Image (cartoon, rainbow, N blue to C red; front, side, top):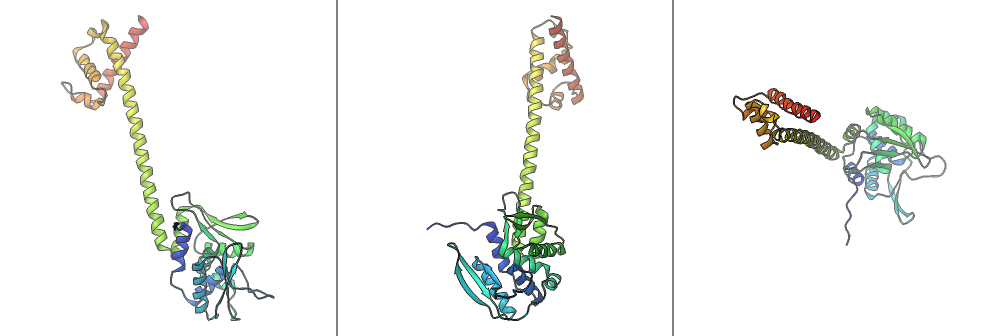
Length: 289
């Protein structure tokens, strides 16, 4: 038997589908979101909800029971996929604009459960809801803005798509919808990512510093070895020669460490000044040779 891991979208929807039902106005708002419509069907009777996810079907069934819509479930096979259709009685719903005003979070939750997507937590962030019509996308977008979230609007296969790519906006929205475990998971991932970036910056900085130290030590070593083979070496003051010998023997030492191992001790700037003198003397000697 092969076990497959649930996608992150499936995990978030599983959490949302198990959140407690809200007040009656919130239940109506969520049912509107689940339905993918902006008004009651006129003419031929249509199911309230169509979904290929059992967890969404169970959520819709609980909501419709709460609203006394006497839900009936039908199962239909569409292209090797099982769909759940949920029918209700003739109880008139409130206008969708009223539901938007009463409970925008419920409306967005329902729309996300049926037509939403969230990228895997360790990948570049992308959150979206695909609208069935421009009118539905407009209503869902208005509900998101009522929660303080401004979605982007795009199009895929001639259908409108509301999407977010800002991590803070997605975390804020999931909190409004009641997916608190998902919020904690995303915040934890943000902390881990921030720490990794900080470690990488520190490692890169240390690597760059070490490269500069090594390059400087090689140049100083070449200058010292070059001067040692000439008469210029003995023209240097004894204290400078002692410093140059230490530099040659300990190329890994910083200027501060070199200054601490001479008598009397020297500051970092004093060591740097003397090493520049050595390099300059070696350069003049090579040019005049």
